[in-house]
Amino acid sequence: MKGLLILAAGALLALPALAQSAADYCAKARDPSRCEARQAALKNCGEKRGVARRVCLEASIPPVDCSKAQNPQQCEAAQKAKEVCQGRTGKELKKCLREEQPKKKHRKPAAKT
Image (cartoon, rainbow, N blue to C red; front, side, top):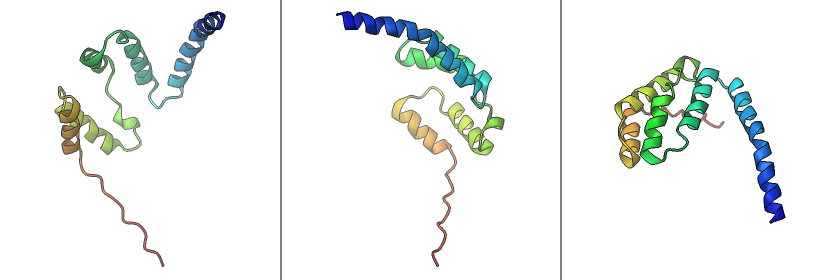
């Protein structure tokens, strides 16, 4: 019982440290403003579950800025696929995303000499 009380007290004292680490994480992110918006959305939608949570997150989180992506063309294609497949869930969503995204070009391995 005493150990459980100590564990609970330690968890409560660690909460400010967790909040600080999220801010530090966003400062190091590729798109800090989107990261902060995502953190706020996760906090605001935290009490919701299932479809209601997904809808809340989709409404709260801004789209990715593809100009900051490693591969802007691929990012834009993924954004278009998400727009086309919006409203679908589960296997139907996965199938739609697979069909909408362009096929990846595989490089041939270098010939051994």
